[in-house]
Length: 72
Image 1 (tube, rainbow, N blue to C red):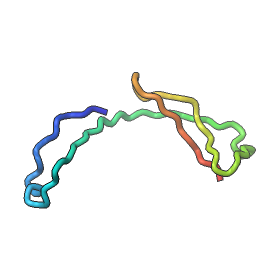
Image 2: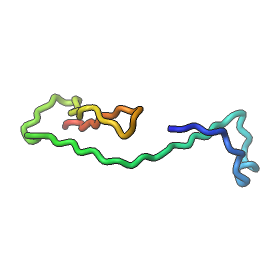
Image 3: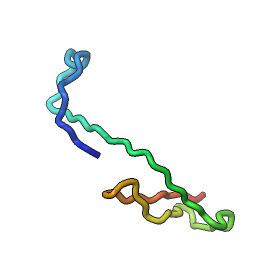
Image 4: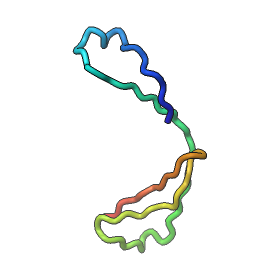
């Protein structure tokens, strides 16, 4: 995620209520795919409220993510 300087207010917003402060965040979108195979899924008997968690994976050099699948 990159943060850039706050741009000026859009023209249609300048006539509305004035805020004491505000911010602007721009998110860089990175497309990727990840395959998570769950063997013997039909035999999975997790307790209520627990989740299945994938191993850690990354879409780039500086991030770490996991998929989670809630159980019923």
